[in-house]
Structure formats: structure tokens, C-alpha cells
Length: 337
Ligand SMILES: NC(=O)c1ccc[n+]([C@@H]2O[C@H](COP(=O)([O-])OP(=O)(O)OC[C@H]3O[C@@H](n4cnc5c(N)ncnc54)[C@H](OP(=O)(O)O)[C@@H]3O)[C@@H](O)[C@H]2O)c1
Image 1: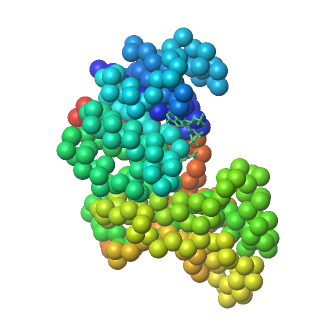
Image 2: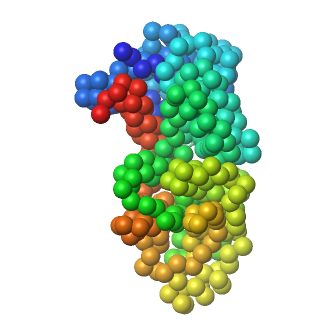
Image 3: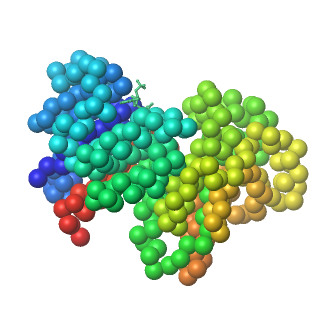
């Protein structure tokens, strides 16, 4: 049996996922008995569609010229088309409107309403409508996976399966690489906030409009997903107390340093509350990471702190998380232990 896949969004993450499907094809086929066909690849202005399976090698060779491929159909929209293709899994990798969760939110509801399992790297739907998505998936007896939405391939959502014999008390994390890069540069090199931000933009870490990163909204969204997953909550981003880093001065950083402390932009979930704000931490804290890395510290009842760190962004990082989600879905729907 082939798993029939529809991919929405062929940008950085979508393309890296397709490449990983190709690179790992033998492993998937032979070791995991996971045989797949990519039936549709949607972009905003049309789609590649082939019900016998799109030739991924040809598409990857064409790079940005994929619209010249024989399977390309103009003006086909995912929202109108995914219900017609008998898909098993719909993978959304579109950019999210942070206020509405669109277009991913509609894609996810449409897929679930049409009995299609979902994988998403788009986080908006999950910090806005976590409960509604899960309720619908449960009602339809379908799977929804979204490991890539928090720290990409750092397996922090799936870690809950390994901690069933324990209890998580609190989460403290750095979930936004851009703001961590800026604070690291201010602290280690003494550069001003505006200079560090400009550097982050020049290096491609920060968007032209960096508000979501530096004001904490991006980290807050990831914190909601993480806390909902690990604490079985159903919160939304409206319940996060958010404070950004744009008001942090060089003077404040130097003052902290003189006390052996560091200012970090922490995302914290404990005792039913969600907070993203600059906090002072000890210099030798495991949360004192440099640059664009992400780190998550779980305080547990029976094992003390458990810390996991890694690259929180990147096309291959997110693509690998999606592939892992696909493997999980394959195992569950085919009842493989
Ligand atoms: N990049 C990362 O490191 C990373 C890591 C984890 C999660 N994510 C999340 O993954 C998602 C994708 O990120 P990305 O870096 O791959 O973004 P990207 O390079 O901008 O790719 C998104 C693609 O989706 C297309 N698209 C937009 N609206 C669409 C629609 N309605 N239907 C079909 N396709 C549509 C875009 O087309 P146009 O560009 O032509 O509009 C673009 O090709 C985002 O939600 C992001 O937050 C990214």
C-alpha cells in the first residue's frame, strides 16, 4: 500500500522535505516498508498533480522552474482540490498569518473534514485553535502531527512519549533564534540592540519586519504549542504574558554581567501560566546558549532537569521533522510496533 501525499507549499521547508524523501527513499521503502506517492504539490498559483505519483527527481531537478513540468496545472488551489485526490496525508508548509493562522488553518480543517491525516510546519493554527484541531481529529479518528512547529527537528513535542513514567513540572526555553542572537551579540561583543538587529537581518536570521521575533510573539506561539502538548492544556496565544527585548539597553546587560548574570529571552510554562519575557539567569545555566540555537529545559519530578538543545530553524531541520511525522503516521495507520 502506498501512502498518498499532498504537499502544500514548495518553499524552503517543502522543497527540503521533498529532497529528504528522495535521499531516504531506499531506507523508507526497504527498512520501514513505507512506500509513498506524492500526488499533489500545491503552490499559491497552481499545483503539480499526478494521481499516479509525481516524479520527485524531475521536480527537484527543475528547481524554481517546476511550473514548466507537464504535471503543472494553473490556478488549482489546495483548498478546492485536496478533497478530490484520495490523499492519506496532507502536509502544510505555507507561511502563516499570525493573527488568523491562514491559509494553513483552513487547509488543516479541510483535510480533516475529508478524512485526511495532517502534518504541519505552520504553527499559527496550533497556537490559535489547538483544541478545535484536536477535537476534530479525534472525532474523525485521524492523526495530526506538527513537530516542526517548535524548534524544528529538536524532538521536544515527541519527548512526551518518553516521559510517561515521569511528571513535567515546568518548561523554561529559548525558542526564538533571532532574539537570542541579538542578546548574545549585545552581551558578548557589547554591540547596541540596533546594530545586533541589523546584523541578524544581514545574516538572514531576522525578517525585514522583525517584530514577531523581538517582541516575543513567535516564541509565545511556540510556547503555547509546547505547553499544550506536554501538559495537555488547551491554551491559546492570548493567554501568554508577552514582553519583548527591544527595550533592553547595553547598560542593563552590563549591570547584569557585573553580577555574574545574563539577560535571556525566556519562554516559561509553569503552574498554569505562560510567560515570554527577558529574565536574568546565571552565567553557567544550561539556558545560556549563544547565537541562533534553541534550548528547552524541562523540570521533572523524578529525573530533575532534562535539557535538549539544537538548531531551531532551517529547511532541512524542519523537513526532517516532517519526514519523522510521516514515519509516525505510517507506523500508526499500518499498526507497526
Ligand atoms: N524555514 C524554517 O526554518 C522553518 C522551520 C520550522 C517551521 N517553519 C514554518 O514552515 C512554514 C514554511 O516555511 P518556509 O521557510 O518554507 O517558507 P517559504 O520558503 O516562504 O515557503 C512557503 C511556500 O508556500 C507557498 N504558499 C503561500 N501561500 C500558499 C497557498 N495558499 N497555497 C500553496 N502554497 C502557498 C509560498 O509561495 P510564495 O512564496 O510564492 O508566496 C512558498 O513557496 C512556515 O509556516 C514557517 O513558519 C519554517
